[in-house]
Length: 337
Image (cartoon, rainbow, N blue to C red; front, side):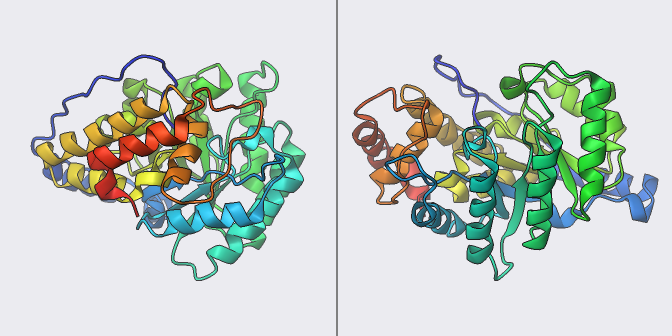
């Protein structure tokens, strides 16, 4: 995901001095202070594309376009894909369509070379559990879920939702903090309680409140932390995130893998360079809308990605041509799959 803003995004400088040593110290701390059975599942660490969804021109879910998008993404060397989430327009899809999408993805990833995290957070717990059980049947690697947000639910109702969902399958659950989507940040204390639930492995943190992220990590060092804002990923990575999940990874997945590695290797110059390319891409998408713009970008390089589902529209009618020209003239072209 990216921050939805109409303002130009400044390129940020990140201080990475001695970060490799910091990562080693972090791992030693985890090993020393956390019981073996409580250690995080490190098999999930890494970078994931928040997979886009393929729709026909009529607006119906299109398995062929989903296949085209997914095959392009799978060529990029990412750790995995995160399906059925906000970038996949799941809020505009029915449960049956999301189940069909899972089936398409299961066939494309049956070699088990790619980790699959299935987002299952729907307005009601019954549908969420239905999606979760389907993901388990497909042998996906983990679940994730938005907190319930159709009504102004209390903290206890949100806690109960996650408790019931985490217990519904044997798959590890990645909870989701994304105030830009839910219109409310969850309190630190509530997130800590949720992270303490059995089977909850970590959190996708899509918020600019990096101090809150740091406090979460400090209090629950045995959990996984994925960051969700593409254009400032490096800032969160320097705080010790275990990976990222992002929209623009669909197009430039290899770049984000190298960005993550450059932070861990304390390569400040490369980190700034790669994050700058990421920010330029996000800035180029904003006049069109991020999700419609991403599909225009994929079409411009020959991927049959189709269009976003209404009411999302391409606000820039010349989006495909404009973004295509940007990709041709930008260093981003070197990172296309």
